Structure formats: C-alpha cells, structure tokens
Length: 339
Image (cartoon, rainbow, N blue to C red; front, side):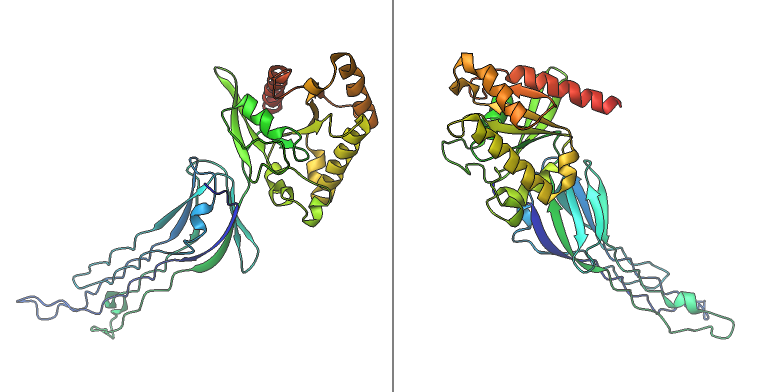
C-alpha cells in the first residue's frame, strides 16, 4: 500500500428538512388549527480516529464527502427524520486544518476519538410554531438551513515512541527489521526507504514500544533536497530520537563525524524543537571494524561531536548490542512516563 501523509478533501453537511404548513382535518373537529411539524436536521460529517489505519491513501481519489439531507416535516405534528451522519475514518495522528483559514480544527491521536468537521443544518419550523391569538391559521413555515461546507487539509504525523534519524544507508531499516516484525526494503544503495515504517518492539511479555524509520536525510534536506524533508514532521511526535551513524561511511572517523554534523544542521534548520528532544547516538556497522579498533573509533566519533549523552555501539545486521539498546530504550520510556 502506498504511504500518503497529506490529503485535501471537501466536506458538505446535509441541508435541514423544511417545516410543514399543514392543518388538522378530522371529522367533527371543524377548527383543528395548524399542525405542521418541523423538518429534520441535516447529517453532519464526522472524522473518527481508527487504530487499524496508517495512511491517508483512501483520500487520493475520494475527495468529496456529503452527509444526508434532513427530511421535511409533515402534518399531525410529525417531525422530519434527521439526515444520516457521514462517518469518515482516519489514521491515528491525523491533524485536520481548514484550508480557508489555516486553523487547526483538531488532532486525532486516540482510537475512537471523534471530530465534527461540518455540522448539518437545522430543520425548518412548521406552521404550528406561528400560531397566535391574531393568526389562528398561519400558513407560514421555514425551510431548513444549509449545512456547513469546508475544504480540509489532512496531515498525518505517525505516532511512535522512538524515531530513527540518519543518512541514507546508515542502517536504520536494518535496525527496525532486527528489533521488530517490520520488513522495510533493505539494499546496498541509498534511498531504499521511500516512506516511514513503523515497528513494535517487544522487550518482554508485557513491555513494548513503537519505533519509526523515516527516509534518510541528505545535506540540503531543509531546502527540499532528497526524500527525508517531507517526512521529518513524523519525528515531531516521538519521545526519543536515535541518531544512527554509519561508522564506515568513508575512509576515517572524520567522515562519520562530518555526516553526523550535517544531520544536526538539517534538523536545526527544519525545526529547532527537534534538537531539544532526547537524542542518543547509535554507532552502527561495528561488524565492519576490527575488534581492536572499535573502542578507539567510538571514542574518536564521540570526541569529534563533543557528545556527552548516551552512546551505543551496535551491529544491526548481526544484532550485536541491539538487545541492550532496546532494554535501555524501554527503561527510558518507562521512567519518562513516571515523571
């Protein structure tokens, strides 16, 4: 299924039913008077967050959503039937904006959460409401009101506890496939990840967290270069960032340091709030380094970045150090929830 994280739709709520101009006509009751009922309310458009969805692909072709109009009232004070609501299901993490005003109308982050984006019009009044001491036989009634109409922009930001950050081919997809049941495309060329992948990491029977892999960034991503820029927003909801660094991108540790600095620069240019998130360094592909040199290489990268936060050295493809990393992440998330 193609991943789609933005869509524009038009929503049109139902028109209220018209009121009725009716008079009571029964045998032996010559002056029955007005008995026209009110029209029913038009149906509304309601968005509902659905945990089983993970993309806005359903809105690529379905662009216009309408609700049912209300039914007209009738004699004997019968009210018209209300129009049926149109329920639209969207993924968790969907932001809803008004195209006309750019106002954020809602943020659907919990399963079953509802948001009314267009309210149906009220039904019209029957002539029963216009009876008075001076007008015993009113023929006046009112039509139903029009329902609301809006053009909406839906924007999906995936909900994950941990986000993976790094250059193409840093090993992010290999890591998420090693720790979860996710199966992203993995190959020895850049940009194999074309859309975010989510995986659930089970540390033990009752402890787990969600991890997200986004397409790799390149220098100039904040200006639109590469693929990662359009998916950086998915990292804004995460609680922890893992900065995956390929320790063998070139001929020396200086290449790894340079690559890491470029990533941080793009993060800052895109959204400085991302730099304030808890972030760990994860040095990957240690299997390509001689065991005697692994310690010195790690120390050189940490010193070159002037880094004083958590550092983990792993080989995602061999799962070396991966279990320890996952347990540390789980402990961090649990401590973060208890604060």
